[in-house]
Amino acid sequence: MNKSFFRIFQISSSFFMANMCPYGRFTHAVVRGIPESFGKPAGDGGKENGEVSVDLAKAQRQFGCLTGALRQKVGLQLIEIPADGELPESWRIEDVAVIQGDTALITRPFKQQRRSEVEAVRRVMSELNLTVVEMGAEQGGSGGATLEGSDVLFTGREFFVGISSHTNHSGAEVLADTFRDFAVSTVPVCGGSRLKNICSMGGPDTIVFSSTEGAKKTLRMMEQLTDHHYEVLSVPEESAANCIYVRGPSKKDFLLHRPVEECPDSVSAFQKLPDYSLLPTACSEASKLGASLSSLCLLINRKHTYF
Image (cartoon, rainbow, N blue to C red; front, side, top):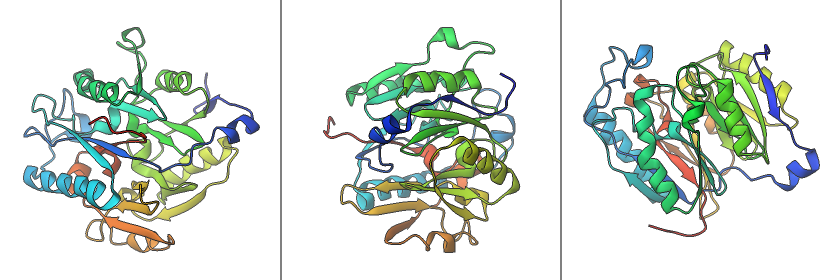
């Protein structure tokens, strides 16, 4: 297909509304520790990781603050996979799984050197009694399907998959085949290296979007492809566009966002959200490596606790 964006799978509106999953209801967060090798690229790091100076101790403190907020303030059950120095990018756990309902799709990262990161995550998904679907080896290899979770935006109603240097159309087709009850649309990432670098969910029907020109172009394409109206919260700084929204077990709305020290011009936008518990959460060191807040966790909604 020559089009740069398209809807892969579309269901009837009546079926879609019956199967809508309100976004943000989570019970568990799965994270992976920051290794001593943090900042070293897995294989050919390219421009994301090349020649970047990071502060390991600061990154570990910021990781601790993120996990503390998810556990103590939001009230999620936290599952932490130990850090692995042999896998320097394994802390980017969002990339290796896409989870909706009782199904976890284990992805196929673009870099060959990152693909062993999925093993520990697969075990956790199985222990949580999720149905695990894997992108098979026949879909990979040179020129094969690649998919990373940081290119996937689930709104509770549909999936948007960013076509980037990390995720291709074949990977998006695997996701559409896995989550057949939801519409899946692809859009080129016109700003940032990954879709969720320029946008994220800020509530059940609210998308936080960067106001950069590239992000605006991606937003216009998404608006053309969806049948649903979303409120858009625009933020001037691209790094502020990635947030973590959770409707916690206490039925309160929480939003983890970058603090004023990192995004001074965007904090006022978040204060427009009514009745939210705003949790400023630093992410400067991971951000130097092209990551965002959501890169560091997988959010899951499970009725029972298995740990």
